[in-house]
Amino acid sequence: MIIYCNAKVPVTLLPETFSKACGSEAFLFDPAVTCDIGVSGDRILAVALPGEGELQGKRVDLGGRMVFPGFVDAHTHIDKAYSWNRAPNRSCDFLEAGKRFEADKSLWNEDDLYLRGNFSLRCAWAHGTVAMRTHLDASDQVSDMVFSVYNRLRAEWAGRISLQAVALTRIDFFTEPSEDGRRRAERLVDRGAEYIGAMPIMNPDLDQQLDRLMALAKDLGLGLDLHVDENNDPSAECLRRTAQAVLRNEFPYPVACGHCSSLALQEPDRQRETLALVKSAGIKVISLPMCNLFLQDRKFNGSEREGGTTSTSTPLWRGVTLYHEMLERGITLACASDNVRDAYFAYGDYDMFETYVQSLRIGQLESRLAQSPQLVTSTPAEIMNLRDFGTVEPRKRAELVVFPGRSFNELLSRPFTPRQLISGEEFRQAELPDFSELG
Image 1 (cartoon, rainbow, N blue to C red):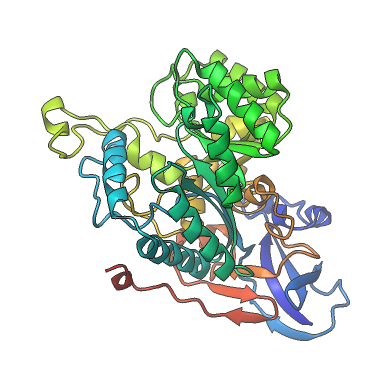
Image 2 (tube, one colour):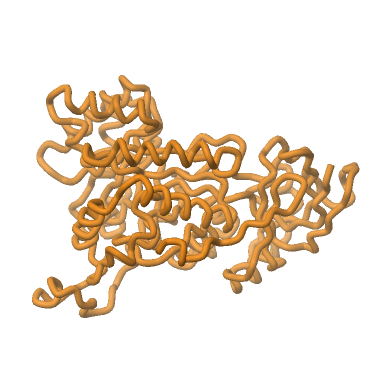
């Protein structure tokens, strides 16, 4: 057994008994505990305060540095990723992003999808991610090819990154009143989809569409993972309508809703009503802070927008959903990468620590510092139903990320310093792939 000594671990990622060691006022500003982590094979066997355990084995001193469990990224798009160079979104606008993405699909083939998908996973692995859920294009033209490549990647990466797939398309793709939607869903499940995804939009038939979608998913025994309200329109209430549909249909499987941006622009009473419905329905919310910060609240002069120039004024809001209000009510909330270097988000590298730092800063989560590491570890693991990941506890996978900082303040002040990665009883080397590999 290897004992990783003097590891500084966020207290909310440790067994509950460790919270007793954190009664001082200083803990409010540095909610982490120094402990020893005993590892055998690929599993954590024990976690103890220094000097309190009877751990026997080779000791490796981490010097009081901050340690997180491997990151869990619950909302990605590896089929779109790393396509910015050939499909740039010049206006950085949501509508143009969709046009650029559709045009780029004409260049997709299995070699291209594999190259970009494998590059995505290598980046994520090098940054310390151990599990990912990816939305994959489920349109008839490309779905067979996309899922064929996904299954190849899932097999090749088994034991390193645990992958899940969501079949993503328009909601009417699955809910039109014919057998076509069911046949499409069944075919996608046969090809490896584990969740039904859709992008509901406000329309007179929305309630009926959600009812049909949930009836289909219930018959297939699948959960839902939806893109909702990714805009700055206060009248967009797909999150609210989804929660009502879950309750109306007594839908028994997990439902995750990504984005939920417009909720932040609604009247406070309406927000409270919607949050109560979301809580009652058990909906899990996944915020995509970097992508929403990039796309939302861009303003254009009409003559300039078509030309793809820049915004004409400073954005006034951050594009993210109601972090504090959700956490206050006990609504499950995670943050994830979303798009990476494609038409929807120009930047990123599947670095979940970057997602964590940006989430904390954008959402001003310093007042919830103890809860904040859960957004990219234990909570997305819960959403993905991954019992082996997300915390530093006995029986969990011993995939750990070691940072140079010895406190939250040091950690967050130098977020891009090199980190060390632990896999089981040894440090692992994982180099980032060179961008030149993308051509």
